[in-house]
Image (cartoon, rainbow, N blue to C red; front, top):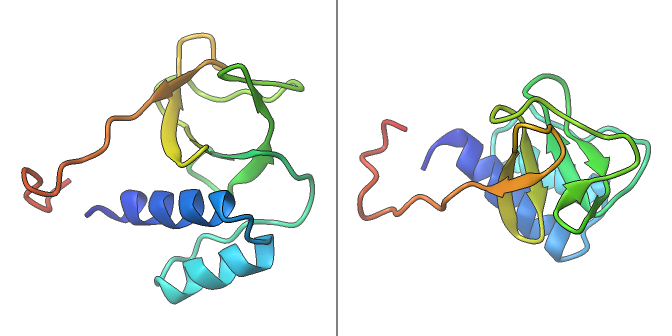
Amino acid sequence: MRKIENISEIINNAVNEGKSREEINAMLKEAGSSLMLTEGKMGNALLDIGVGSPEFVVVKDGKLTNGAGGVPHQDYVYYAGKTYQLADDGVTLVEVPATDPETTDGNG
């Protein structure tokens, strides 16, 4: 499994289990990640733009709300146990297909 998939799985599971930011950071650190969630606003999803720490955002009806947005087809959103990227409008979630461990060669 690639590192982004490990991080995605950890964050998705933790958010779905209602873990706190501190608990999620401890889980990430234990997994060997330097990625840490920063203190601040809360939401029901996490937006990862690839630099810094993911930020909590609000997703409603499959879209980022409250002025949140990202780079289409590049940034990741972790929401409701799944990983998404953003459509061309920068706010609509597009599910990233799960990787089948039977067909993944480990090279990403």
